[in-house]
Structures are given as structure tokens and as C-alpha cells.
Length: 212
Ligand SMILES: [Zn+2]
Image (tube, rainbow, N blue to C red; front, side):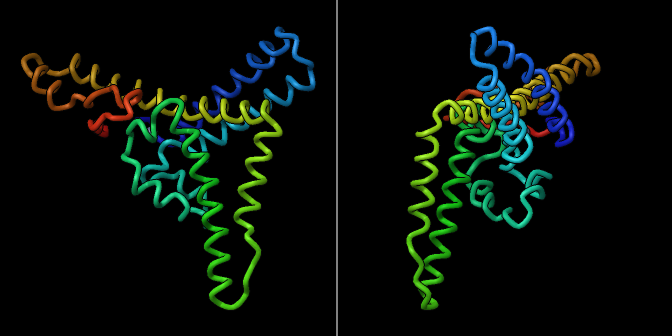
């Protein structure tokens, strides 16, 4: 699979291609210029945040974790629960949104844990976790276009990463099969076959592709 700098490059490069394309599509559809600018900006920012901060590789020890600094612990349960390079981390649509939902869920739990600890030490706090959750939901409901744009950017940011992993894994397999000494192709193919390539699409896939 490509390394983190390659994934970062692909994320930024695709956002640079996407930005004018999305803006011109919106303008062609006669969306008001100011709205087109806002939607395009939200999609492209979400695309980069998804690719570089909410990367599918949060399911393993990677440079992505260092980017979270002291908040790294938030992703530990995610890493323990999500198999590496499986549909639930590297799938195309659901996993990027799952990571976003997981992040907000963990923030709410963190606020709740703080309230519990404060109560134990005799400092009862209001139910901030409830008001925080309610304000997030209200915000998404009140801003449907921005919310959908954000979700779209998160999906494309994750998809660029997953497709790159998919292409490189399959490409290396083909390379090994084609460029091995005569007579060893079948053995190498069997040994290096990257498992079912369906992991990109199949949430029930039990096959874990080899790492190269
Ligand atoms: Zn990956």
C-alpha cells in the first residue's frame, strides 16, 4: 500500500482537481456564486481533513496517529475493533462517515466521563454531554446542504486513500505474477495473492489482504 506521504499527496492533488470541477458544475447548474463557493470550500476542506486526519489508516499504527497529539487515545478503541484494511476501515462510503460519527461519539463520551469524575469529587456539573449532542444534531439539521457537502468531502477523501491501496495491492500482485522466473509464477501467485480484493466492497469479508 502507498505510504503516508504518498496518500497525503494524492489527497491534496485530488482536491486541487476537484475544486474547480465542483465549482464549475455548481455554476453550470446555476447555483448562486456565493453558495457555490461555500459548498466547494466545504467539500474540499472535508476531503483533505478526511484523507489526512480521519484517514482509513487510523486502524493501525501510522503517522496519522501522531497528528492527533494528546487526542490520540480517542482512536485506540477504533484501532482495536476495526480490522486493518477491511471494509469497515477502507470501504468507500460507510467507513469515512463511520469515523466521523465515531469521533463525535467519543467526544460526547469524554464530556460524560468528565461529568462523572467531577460528580465523584463533589463537583456536580450540568449534563453538558446532552446539550453538546443536541447542538451537533441541531446544527446538521439546520444546515442540510453544508452537512451533505461535508459528508461528500469525507467520502471522497477516504475513497482516494482506499482506491490507492486497492490499486497498489492489486498492481503488486500482477507485477509479481508477470515478472518472476519461468516456472515459479504459479507458486508466487499463490503465495502473494492479496486475498479477496472484495474487502473494498464487502462488509462481511473475512479475508485480510497481505501487506506488501
Ligand atoms: Zn490504507
